[in-house]
Length: 99
Image (tube, rainbow, N blue to C red):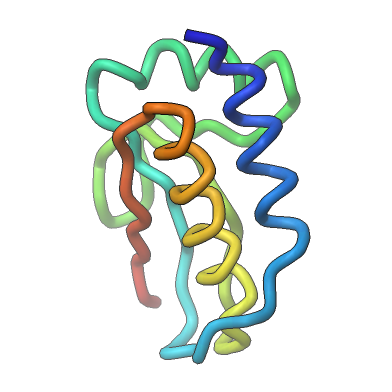
């Protein structure tokens, strides 16, 4: 599987979103299934995307989307990234941790 291409697609999709309805402040993550973590981690490193091995409040290794400050912008980016990654066959979901 070409994880670099999939992640590029996800980043591109996230750059064109309209904000979702904000629900509070917090960190937004995209968490892949265990079978895809190694490949996405390597792709993130290659592309300079933040990968965290232990997320704040969740504990799972994941892609860090950003901090949503009640704007809904990062929530929408996470949703777009998940859709793009799933279109490439990568099982994942968006998660958020409120402050």
